[in-house]
Amino acid sequence: MDMVKTEWDRVKVRLRDEVGDAAYRSWLRPITLHGVNGGDVKLALPTRFMRDWVATHYAERIRTLWGAENPEVRTVEIVVGATRATAAPAPKAAEVPTPSQVAAPARPAPVPCAPMPTAQAEADDLGAPLDPRFTFKNFVVGKPNEFAYAAANRVADAEVVSFNPLFLYGGVGLGKTHLMHAIAHQIRERSPGRTVLYLSAEKFMYRFIRALRHQDTMSFKEQFRSVDVLMIDDVQFIAGKDATQEEFFHTFNALVDQGRQIVISADKSPSDLEGIEERLRSRMACGLVADIHATTYELRLGILQSKAEQMGVIIPQKVMEFLAHKITSNVRELEGALNRVVAHSQLVGRAITLESTQEVLQDLLRASDRRITIEEIQKKVAEHFTIKLSEMSSARRSRQVARPRQIAMYLAKQLTSRSLPEIGRKFGGRDHTTVMHAVKKVEELKETDHNFAEDVELLRRMLQG
Image (tube, rainbow, N blue to C red; front, side, top):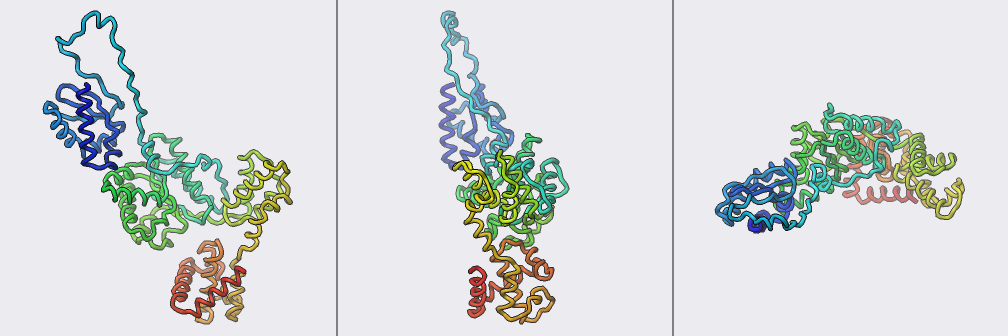
């Protein structure tokens, strides 16, 4: 048996030199010697998927290399089995031990068996870790996010849904990542046999580039196209990355064709994602697109109450109402403010009051007070160009009115956290595409018209000062 192991070690060295480190680590290093019977060798891999891949792509080469080491080796079979080496064939008659040897057999040293990796474990190594706090139970539902929450629940509960992909979009810190983690947690709990892969678009791109560098794209494709649920967070990151978009497009199609579920998140809807190919935007929009809107006062108050319960602390109602009124940008900032208030109370031994809260959060509250509104922008721009404030919402299209209106839309996009649809509604119920056109037009004019650029910059400073 020692000779067989030595031959296998030499074969592995040859294989590594031929296929490279990346492919060797992914597919060949997990192989173990399972058994030898004369000229027939059995090698084991921990999963059926890996067995099929190695049998298709490497089995014949392994047989050839082993045949060069030992001409008696006729076949190499790849099987799914425990990662251990079986005993050698029974000894011949001349090798039968004597009775004295039988009476006191040598005890072989135990061979430790490594735990057999599962398909989900492989996906976990490939993807990003899940936050245990981000579950459906800890997600506070309100009018701004109830549709996205219901859609996420449907994907998590049913193996087959009528919409694929689920596309979640909204501003920073509104709960997209929380919902994606919650979907993954619930699928793993209810359907342990399904493989879930969650990662950011940035990590998807990094792994693709690494596969290109190591000339191992086939392994990359198989890894991503063999999962049951693929979840890509912040897909806007691959804007302008043509090669990554091409690979993601084909991965997307392969999974949908197999009936596998895809969940995607972004900061904008598919139609608003700039730098993304039209065919990919069309594909991402063909399922269910769910918007997570900015939080309302009631939702922020509910989030604070839920967070306080999780932390096991009692927060005066007046303090929570104060925070819900003052911290309006996003949920992360809101939770961060509560964490600071609680930590200060616990560290200095001081009760949580409205006064202590204002003292601890004075820098955050000052920034919040300085936050610019769309109404302020409209008023300042109208004054600067000597037009009526009502013109910002009127249907007039003359350049005298349209250009200041476009500048106001541009500044609203740059200086507030409002979404494009929200900005459009503030300008007479205009469509979000009108706001996009205004932003693009102002950016173009700033590049070509020096006086125009100075006007826009002056208005920005006046609003921020």
